[in-house]
Amino acid sequence: MPAVPVVCCEGPLVRRLALAPLSVLVGGSLLLAGCGGSSSSSSQGSTASGSAAASAAPSSAASAGASSAATPQPSPSCQTPSVAPTIGTSSTVAAKASGSYGDKPTLTFSGKPASTLGVQVLKQGTGKVVAKGDLLEADYLGQVWGGKVFDNSYDRGAAAAFPIGVGQVVAGWDRTLVGQKVGSRVLLSLPPSQGYACGNDQAGIKATDTIAFVVDIVDAFDKSAAGQATAAPQTLPSGAPTVKGDLGKPATITLPTGWKPPTTPRVSLLAKGTGPAVTGTVIVNYAAVETGGKSESSWADGTPQSIDTTNTSAAPFDQLKGLPVGSRVLVEVPADASSGRSAAAFVLDLIAVPTSAKKAAASAK
Image (tube, rainbow, N blue to C red; front, side):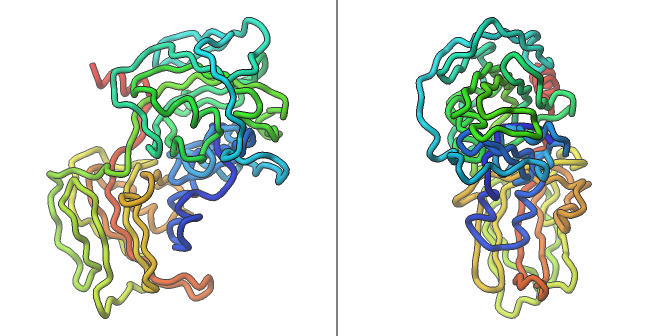
């Protein structure tokens, strides 16, 4: 997976609620732990590869299209992103990036790195402004200052997705990418305290290294994002959980009295969208409830998630593969006596599939 700036812990879904099935939504992403300068990885549904490079990705616990299992956890003595020091910023960076938005860049450095956090907009986008708590979709390349490239998404052919501004990526990403516009290319210089203060052995990053990133912002999704309002309603399974909410808007889910969970996981199409079929990572918003009464909703209090449907360990969410984007889906999961997990039900809207910055720019023309 990528070495994007990830934080160091489990994804927000896992931390917020002990709904075991949700761990899948945050477990395959492009995370890279940053813990005040460290790195780790995950999936909140992400999209990275599983190589050592992925261990330096900027995300912390969730990102779209990346496999985060390889991302190392920061050492206990290192700062967490929430307490990373606030330092000065500069609008110039002593480095240059080749190419245009969407092109894989080559970085050249012209001197020692500054001790400040550098953020230089190389190309100003015209899209929506990225807000705190959005799921950010971006192509990126990360390189040790004057050293080697430790990760890039351009070679994978699809952008990565991860929560921004909420401590799920290294502090330098949270502090520079919130407020940028979709369609922008941004050059970043992160001193150790804003990147990997603990270092990242797998990615070849030392605790004293300044790291540079070129980031092409492809899109940003907030917690109100939903499937298509024009999706075609399908027949609901008999005795199914109750899903409320207009298509194209946030949904809720409740368990009717006497609900009988299936003996094996069941995925049902509630409304069929007209977008492309899911073949890999898909970005979703969801609501979930378990028989014990616990509930959770990314629409209500979270961030959209990304799920790698090619990861069979993500079952039953791997069954989203082949469904059209824009759809609303019901997932019912039986209890698991061995783990003590209660039966649960989810309603998910399939919002988008990550693409590359180059493809996004071409389709916008």
